[in-house]
Image (tube, rainbow, N blue to C red):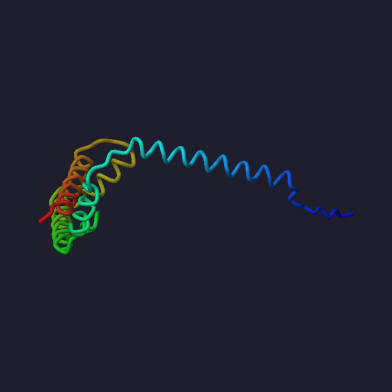
Length: 135
């Protein structure tokens, strides 16, 4: 069984809607009058500022990498890899990396772990400085 509901706007509903519209209009007019009473006229200062803002140069893209940063990143990465390679091969017959990983696996702090951590820290700091330094 289906019900067909017909919704019609009775005159009473229309009167209530007109009353609500008039009340809303009155509130908006009162709010505008209050704003006009408290508004401080600044003799066109805001307009002058906005005109000057449009004449400013466009802002630089935030977070972008400049065209000079890419070679610096590459140089720092190659230098860090070379230094790490020399340190790994030059210490304990090339076993620094193996010793450090094994010590980390057993949660033991040894000179190999500290050396590997120091190299990673130094490479990270140099890379961050190279990227964030502006020309």
